[in-house]
Length: 113
Image 1 (cartoon, helix red, strand yellow):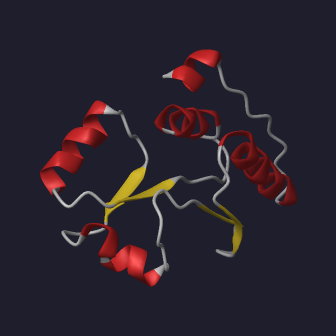
Image 2 (cartoon, rainbow, N blue to C red):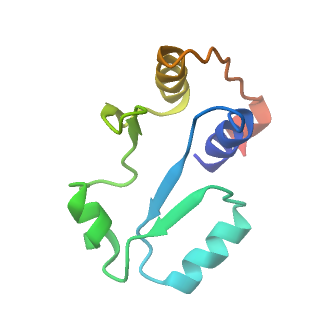
């Protein structure tokens, strides 16, 4: 999903959009290597040494990985576990509700990266 997420962050840089990740790797140093290697340019939080049982996933009741929440500008979860085109549609719908009409496109290279 990283190529799709990178594309969203790049295309929506001028929009009221933020991508935030939570990583469940137990090893913080390994996580730092992955962030650098995969060129993750968005904010990503570490769930702690407990991995999938860490404080963030516990607070948000996450029981499967990855879990995707799409929140609106009021912080309300509007979509859960949307991926690919469904995620793009969720984002464009929420942006349109705020008066920001956008078109999200992805190249075939991104889809196969």
